[in-house]
Amino acid sequence: MKFSVPIKDNKKLKKVIDRIQNHGRLNGLWTIANVNAVDRLGINDHGPVHSKIVANSALRMFRLIHNSGVKSSVETDHDLKKEDAEIVIILAAALHDLGHAIHREHHEEFGISLADSLIIDLLEDVYDGFHLGVMEGEVLHACYAHGTELDTLTLESGTVKVADALDMEHGRARIPFIEGELTIHSVSATAIEQVNIRRGKKKPVEIVIEMSNSAGIFQLDNLFKPKLEHSGIRKHIEVTVEVGEEDSEKKIIEDYQF
Image (tube, rainbow, N blue to C red; front, side, top):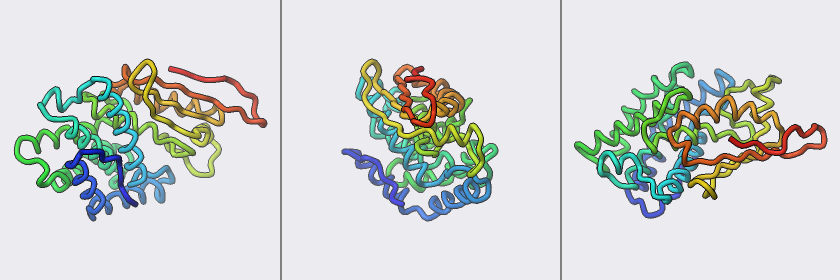
């Protein structure tokens, strides 16, 4: 699978993306993470497809927030640039779920050692010395802090956390569901039709979630909303949920906002 994001004029990001794409060990770890998640546990995927979706959503949100005049954390704290913040986001998106190669339980903690062992390879000749250490720490924070109840400490990690929760179109929900089982998890997960990230009217980012069925509210309240509230970037985001109407079901609500 091609791991791609809109590079724009970020030459360092292009180099990092090329290395992600062609890194054999990373692709091997993605594979075993998916084997554990999908084949052995029967839940949704946590490999390259999920990582690519998270990377693109997080980068989209970051650029909208940054364009509104909000500086990234690496600019504020380390005198780096927007381009460096984008690399933190993309690497964290690529590496945040590698812990599933060991086990789903405590995968955030397990993933840190795996991610750390890859960061140096992926950033070779892009950073060195002090700045390499700074980038390493920022990426590891964003990887670890994607857990639902963990507070993020940077703008970059906040976008990754929210993007992780937004990978829920057409049954790609982050709450695990067992294929074939009729539960509120599975019904809710299949109700999410589309997720759009666009420039907001009142805030830098508007997230519009389209649902075919009001059961999707369970998915939003039990995963997306807690992650958003712990992301540190809630003040930059407005969320609108649009509930469609099916002939076979009584329409319970018209729309939903928080």
